[in-house]
Image (cartoon, rainbow, N blue to C red):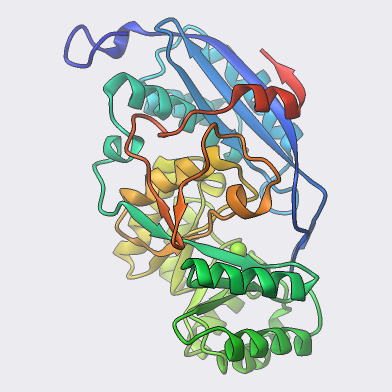
Length: 382
Ligand SMILES: [Mg+2]
């Protein structure tokens, strides 16, 4: 390895690209306005090796009804990105991400995996955590949100009470997958039972039709949610703008905003008060920070969303949020701890008293358990 400032990290080259499609058993079924996830979740893990001995890891966590499929994102890495990666300098992150954009449209999850692995290497070469590469930290801890999405509400209710006792204060209730009356009952129960300092947030995952949205959401406002997320389909931007104008409660856009260009449109049309930032939607941390910067310029706040991720992608998100002041409403990186039967990190993803503690060690900050990746891999290409 060459130290920065000497002859430079320019001397290192990527010598291996390994792509694993993993299927991971989960503990809880999840139901959303846009679909159900149960049994196993399919993700893609990327390992880049270099001639310096340093390896970098990244993860693509697509959801078929949201950003795409694991199979397509594995092919993006294996077939379309591999040719320009082999022999390239992994520290030229911006250049390689431009190559990825030229090679293949879309596939933000695969691009997030690639950028994560490159920044993991650059961090290890530099001796810095990724948050420092991104300009340095504005926070070391991120309030964690747990999503109440189990069709068996009693099971989630019990878990939510336990998490409250452990210090967690943010609860995001998934609505719009059953009757409106059922959403009201669940919110009533949570509001009555959880202490006052528990924050409720509501996410429809596009579950309402525009014609019915405003009347139903006025009922939901009675439970004082911090925000209401993506009530109508992502492409219904005029309806999002009308809802945002009509409600007192802040509205958050998730499925409506993937890219910086869409963030610009969201600001111009005031389709929301808040944006959910996800590295899987924007195609990596750097693009996600562009979304956050546009939101900030337009006076919108941001929240750290995620997909059904392992600790690898959680670490990427946490490092990014640690360095991005405008992602101020916490994060939902609960899956590694509470959703997956087994995570892919060698140590537990760091959650303490309802907060994610962002690691300070170089790169992503925690090692990947390679044996476990190989154990759960249905397909490996290298
Ligand atoms: Mg959402």
